Length: 197
Image (cartoon, rainbow, N blue to C red):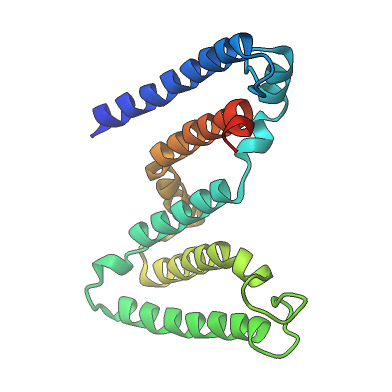
């Protein structure tokens, strides 16, 4: 599997290089077509000047948060439930914390003039809908850490930290492909997007 992923990553890099060359050739052959060369002064300023801004999207944050939540879920011991006294107590206390968390979210969204509703009182789109993935990820991270500590799977703060990092390590290939795909997609629309619209 790693071999195929490496080949796909290489294809995306080759695609980026081909796009650089194609945009340069097309802008030279058809100068009034609206094609922007990625190798021109304007293209290079766009590429280097907005590289970080283009990649810093909510999707990147969602990948990081969800991967941390996944790592916590895998390491907290909830998936290998054996029914011991500590696990039963941890499950009961975690369910109580989940009910409290859902209650707080409901108070922030369901009540009239709730804080997380839009200015018109709608749930979609609203601050709540834009924060739904972080809300779910935060709940997963918090509840899993709580469960793992009480059940004895996460004994120290270092264990909780390692559990969150475990998820990020697992998501490293996804992060790499996010970076490669986003850059290729945005470069394509910068150079050829106006022509295709």
